Image (cartoon, rainbow, N blue to C red; front, top):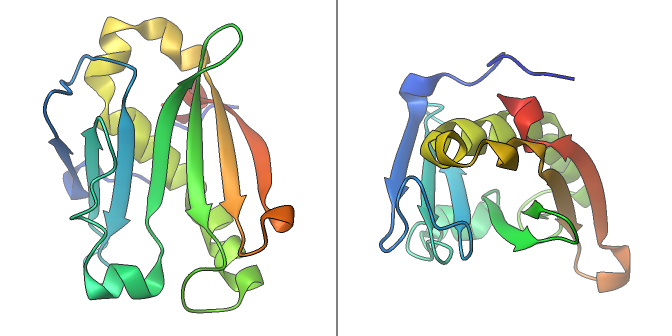
Length: 155
């Protein structure tokens, strides 16, 4: 299944790189921190060697916990993109928050793929990398990890 920028508005995506990470590498360590503005619909993506703690430390973000974090990990045969959603750590019922994350994940993955285009231009084989989405719950035994296809499906 291929998503052809059905939802992402590139003008509303703001991308920032944290040194030493460049637009074309390295792959590991490489993380993504994605937040958004409810009022404007703008998306803010930071790509760096670690999560952008400053970006997620504001009172609203800490209260809502609706940021999405991701990281590249080496798999058995290729890299995997692991995406993390905090389902039970913000405002709202877990089932409601999980449904919102699920509804918006296509957009989130499009933003990761589009915002990091330089990396895929240099290493096109990364498009075959699996996307593993982790839904984190307060009780670890309720945590789930799901395969959401290839990152190249979100071009």
